Length: 227
Image 1 (cartoon, one colour):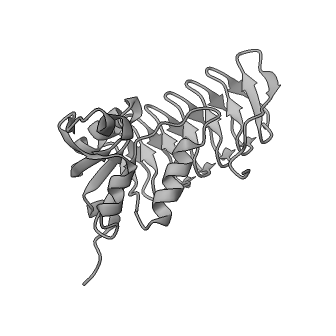
Image 2: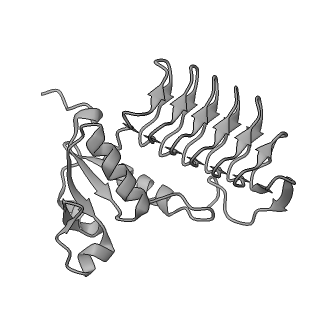
């Protein structure tokens, strides 16, 4: 028997915060079947449903689920300095689960764009030809990714951020809301481009660029390639 395509799998949502709420609405809009939710806090409070979706329990509930027949949605948001979202994705993927890419019907993706597993493309996002987007990456509301950009794994491109042509963003980086990266730049692993910043030169791994004055600070959180 041929296994189902990832895009055809019924889905279980992990987490019940604000990011999870947005993803639940996205999944429903895109016609996906969300059959349950895992969240330790809801389970501890004895909640049985969340926004109409059955609460299956905490993380341990996945042990009762067949990974060959069920996909997951990573509903944990990407925060600066936290690798929780990445750890959840890696742990459950190693257990055999798949994370189908999710694309809001109001987003536009060029036909030749490559989306890895777990990519989440929110409403109003535009991804132009020649782009490659790595696994477990968020392209948030109204983000613009222009031609020939490469975005690594576990990256967050926040609402309203713009990557001009041929920008490269390495694993674990965070491009905050409304930031603009001019064409051809390279943002290193784990770096942070602050909200509203216009980045006009490369940003090394583990550094932060903040504000209109482009203040540069050392970043002391672990990058994606660190333990």
